[in-house]
Amino acid sequence: MPRDQGLLFTPIRIGALELPARLFKTATAETRATADGGVTDDVVNFYRLLAKGETPLIVTGNIYVNRQGKSAPRQLGADDDDKIPGLSRIPDTVHAHGGRIFAQLNHCGRQVVPDFVGAADVVSASGVTDLLTGTRPRALGADEIASIVDDFATAAARCRRAGFDGVQLHSANGYLLSQFLTPYTNRRGDEYGGSLEGRTRLAREILAAIRHCCGEDFPVIIKMNGADKLALRNGLTASELAQAAHRMEAAGIDAVEISVGHYESGFPMVCGSFDLCLRHMVRGSMAQLPTVRRVLMRAFRPLVAFASNHLWPSREGFNLDHAPEFSRRLTIPLICVGGFRSRDKMEAALAAGLCDAVSAGRPFIADPFFFRHLRDRQPGPACVDCNGCVGHLGAQPADCYHPAVRSEKDAMLGREDI
Ligand SMILES: Cc1cc2nc3c(=O)[nH]c(=O)nc-3n(C[C@H](O)[C@H](O)[C@H](O)COP(=O)(O)O)c2cc1C
Image 1 (spheres, rainbow, N blue to C red):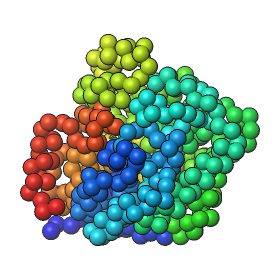
Image 2: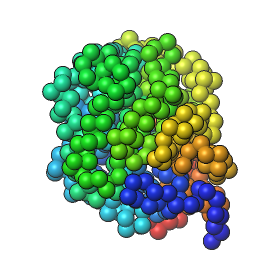
Image 3: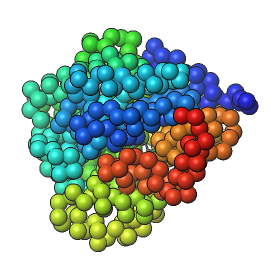
Image 4: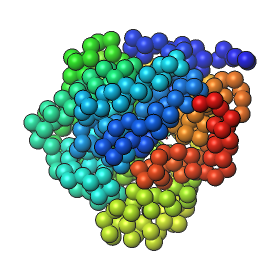
């Protein structure tokens, strides 16, 4: 089997964990769980395939730490001890193939369509309405923040007991921890708001609580935005976010992964084309939007798709623009996600010292053996950034919905002994 000794295939250490190569599977919500967030065979099979593809590190899709933090139907939860036996099926399967897996822990805060998940109580750092969904949260009280810290730590402890190799705090893309970080969504006057020290306090308290119950040797990493991309709103730049990352390093985080944008930013998080995506979205998650927004989205969908195609076209390594601010401030590994498809672009990012590892989402949805195929220079189903997977999220399992790519994937899996 041909092996190339580029930087991509050299080991990297994340906390106490040594990994054999530097291309990871980033978090993508599976939306394959039971109605109450339990693990199904479908979830286990999703990870079995990624592990069979020899993926060096897999991060699960975001897992809610309490029921209030759930953002999508059929999302996984780590909110109850009863879920530990089911959760353990995931790392057990991955370990059987020699892989490693982290659980991504999340609370959605205000970034939820309440009718989509049956949410009764939507909370955030402050009562700032989400312009995309129209969801108006209430500000969390200090006692409630303490219990959210506890929920993250307890969920991490459950994941450790289930056998996960580490956890990732989801502090990117406009979810609760990102809402606390960003001045636009955090207008608090108490110790959880104001300065960067205040706005990073929740994430630092969660990290300390996880260390307390899971130990110093349990890897804990964080996903943050490389930039908030909240035009005309008080969002954060790469420089400010890198300062926040530096504080997380000082607090003991083991690695930082950078993404980009909030829901309110549009689609910078997943560049590409949006016709297929929006066609499915208006029938899925957006069908639960309040009436005016729903009608407007249906009426203007072609225009929104046209504008999005031009604003956020495919580009390899589209978050690398933000990486230098982070890499010059951090000594811990920096992982960059966003548009990586080719071995050359991944190698170039590492060789230029822009980041220490790269991660990818959609290429692994199209081809769970993406890592092995890339390493061995073998062809496989190639993601075309149609974002059909995003369009179906929550309403259907997150899978490849591009007809040609999907049939190539199905044919490939049909030939596998799975
Ligand atoms: C279907 C889908 C689900 C996603 N779910 C998550 C998630 O649960 N947590 C997260 O941090 N990012 C999530 N993302 C964002 C990805 O982690 C990643 O930032 C994005 O897809 C860009 O990387 P790519 O070009 O390699 O796909 C999701 C993306 C997609 C396409």
